[in-house]
Image (tube, rainbow, N blue to C red; front, side):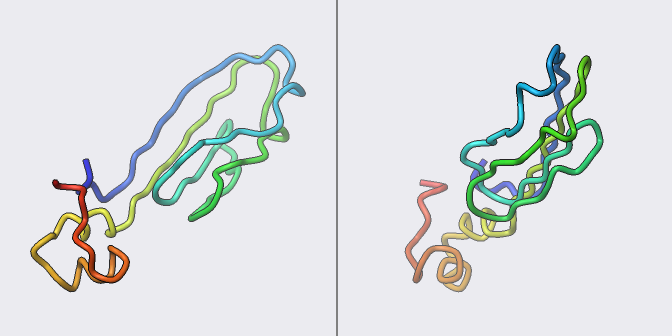
Length: 102
């Protein structure tokens, strides 16, 4: 999995009786770019930092859907190229060999 470069989409549906009880969602530790959609509305895109999104205004009572789109950069693939010194230099803090394949 350390060599993966591309996009993943996670989708789920959930029911709410009181839409006012949820204001935020925290995606936790994410590597790559995250985009969050609630009921088809874009709640934001984050490239770095905490993946906490304000979602209260997108929720409704009843059925809701959430979609998380994750995109990893070429960095994951480049880290896997342990025999390529240039790839290792640019993705592993000064040329340290990545441990993703070890």
